[in-house]
Length: 117
Image (cartoon, rainbow, N blue to C red):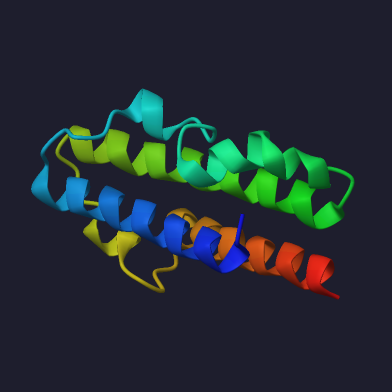
């Protein structure tokens, strides 16, 4: 996987979640969002990416990606009950969702740096 593409894929998935939350359309299910192996990045982490499992950067990415999906699922669950989560999904919000998302990107770039150097 191209690591810059991985960042783009993560950002697209995040936009998909934000759109679903804003529309309250039920297009995403909590059970699907909570698992970290169904999105494109997650599929890579658990397949080809596992070839890098000896790297601490890979283990960090795997952890942060799972953390991100759990945070996203919690937001979706709260939104499904009618609670507003708009502020928590804003860019640069001081929320678990935003922090874990940033951590995923940092971890992706750390693997890229390790494998490039």
